[in-house]
Length: 632
Image 1 (cartoon, helix red, strand yellow):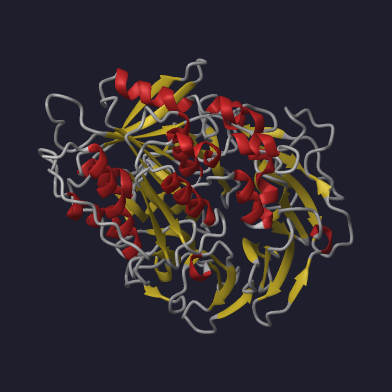
Image 2 (cartoon, rainbow, N blue to C red):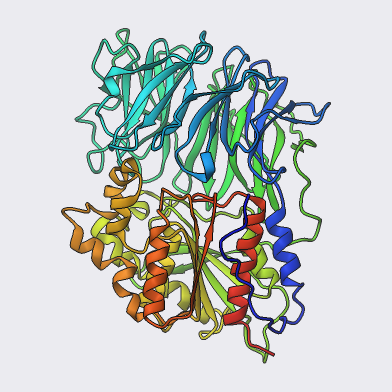
């Protein structure tokens, strides 16, 4: 990939006592490769996965038993997003991000790397969303947003001929994604963020879509909130994760009668302290449930007989992706931890406990003793709302008996969760002698429905109080000095970082924002149409709520900013368009604030190229060292 338009090279500063060389450390953390999105072949012998060992995410395939090295089968310069095997093992469908853009294309390839073709997407504005293969065929069902409207109609494409058929019942129904397919019927999730509703859709369009949960079902706010809907093995029921009956996400089942009409929902798995993050129905009919408790994953196997449930140990705390073998006896799991970049493991599920084994075809792990593990902290906002955050302690010690500098790092989403997974920036900053506190402020997932929705629309200004509450926690616990605290974030976290320095200019000595919104009205006008339509429930309607969006946009208050601010943005980003950082940079310069803009050609909303990852890590750590670390 070509180099960024401007690489910042911070001036030399005195190193923090005991801290390793920050340039070497940041480079090492940013350059480490990973493997993710495993997909086990129908015969259980091979696994396809995505890895960036070549410098960009590519599609590779290798034997599950590790008897041979993996080999790359995606095309030159293709940036691969995800992969799925056809039921007969003849094809692999995979999504490609062209030039870093969110506008994904659907491609197909044979397991031997031949017959590589694009099947869907590829126009100037189209975006493909993954669905699944139709059993007994070579047809793949997916949804496609045309980029000119808020709709994303479902399509079926024949992998052999390339012929595309549009599913009539999904046209003009808003943003939709396919979650399940069986016997000529689809499960389609329709609706905006936080208000997704599962529908049963006839593949041929002979019947109108049917809402999975009846309209009079007693839900909190009139929406089903259905995720991961899929048919049972006999087709007589639908499983789903849902908020419809509980504050927490539960695993539920909806029976289907002889005519395919849905019955009443029943809960299969729920916990007051955890969400169901994922699940699978094994070959023997038992359930595999993945729980999320405080950002860490736990696997539970639930048999039909009472009292036979058991847990499966994982060697790392976070499992972002996984694939069950056809016989249901083991997982190929994507696992990560604070000291472990994403890699693939064989996780046995048999009755006799066996240790998980890291697949040798994965890129090399970090050297032993590299990095720092985080500590989980609990604290409260001024209104009593409980909050959590992960503290990455800095290498070395502070100077003059004071705590070392610290950075508050906000995650994206906001419907996401800070977890103890591998973080390039957290580890690079800690190695540079700067502590990192990564909080889960309200709006984050993993802490119940009320917490998730607590920042929606007109409630967003109330949620901002979590920012000074986080700083107060760092200072009161002695983790940081009040005059040496920085703030940074990505996507929504970037928006929150810009909000923080404009609303509380006295709290932060420096800031970095990566792909953050600065003006919500321009964001709605310039982002993908389907993204804009899906985001109304999160932020507000740009028509009816224009005054609110203007009031909570950082750009409205940029004249109050005093913290030196670095803005980072992928030049190909159409999720949060690059204009959001360009306008913020211009406003900060006009206000006399020290500011720099780092644009990354060929990168989208997420920076994936190895050289750009390194440059971002060096720029961010250098920026905070420059403004937070006392000069010698």
